Image (tube, rainbow, N blue to C red; front, side, top):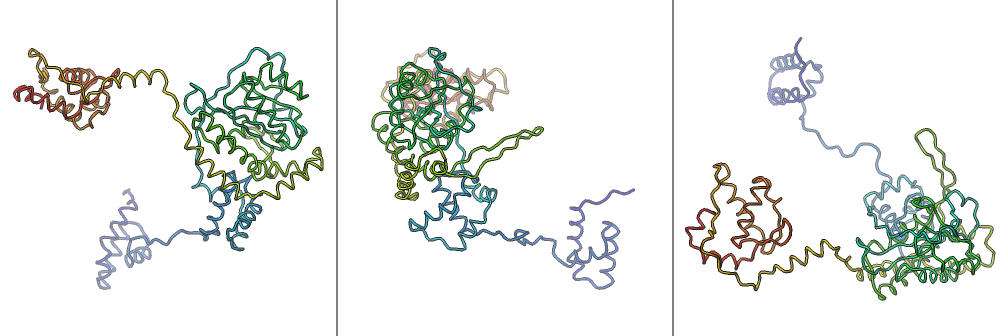
Length: 504
């Protein structure tokens, strides 16, 4: 039984006979068809069609139905998404009509067909259209320190005890702006998030201490539209101390804490730490009073933007069936709308919030936030160097060879490299030297850069020899630095050409 021809072989055979078939007569065409059908097993009509036309595939474009949304619709969608603070699609879709209204009020021209097309978009379609615009953020350092002094005085409250709670019970947490190091002093942020409505208040702190946290609570009492009834914090020292406990007792505020190492007990405020603080301020390091003042002004605008124009969702129920977990959320609404719809909030408070909402412009606040955020980024500082890196930098700073005179070499020391005993290693040493000479003046390198030329022991021995010849210098443990060109020229003048011959 003969083997079947592959598709590639069949195409090659058809390509060979194609030109001859198109120019041949009737009898020759019949012979070609018979031979190809017998060799390939293809049908006669298929072979005729393949020989008549070119085998090159024609690009007919994307198959299937045409896209419903053109570039103009996507451009307006991206603009609305940017103004909304790059929120997820499930929060964005219910809020799109109001965002488009705010854009038109600010002077942006939107065609009626574009508005109708955006109104038909589902959350999954918005996710697909915005996929190219999304970016991922990293993680930040944790600066929460345990406090064992007053734990027994503060009761524990878990995440399951927040069902059906009234507006006024806040979860609190601090966010550190320390970049990649917790050394030294840096600014922090106090975050207060209401459980029932999602109302968020954020305050800039010069440091994480009880005095600064209490000052933030005092500002929160003035800014929150409804009374503060309770506070729930983590186990950090800035919260679990006698000063905060006395302040809560004096102001008749219920004070509870979460369990240790259970971040889900504070799921609401942890989510706001990511979507509000880290998203707009970032993970840079900020220090000093100038940065604190600018950050406080930035938060004064951000609280209006988040509470009045940032829709949020709440989990209605969650159930587990087998290995899958199903969740159901309500329709996305901003905290302002949730306060207006809450039955426990008085009509006087609702009227004040409606008047305040009528005087605000979403597009204008977003433009000011972008400007303030750019100014804030300019005040970011580098994180302090840790101890190992500091010692290495100090060691490197002592090896500055620009103005240091080169000592006279001893006569008994040869500058040339001793020839290797093994014949196979002779051409390796000049390769290492030639690669070093390709580096820039002052460039730091290690022995790992030459592991493709020789083993580690040979490279280390040869680098020690070059160090004795004053071609390179050791600046740290296992790291070397190439001397400037002027020093290498002085070395060449002092030693005869005969001794340098074995190095080349």
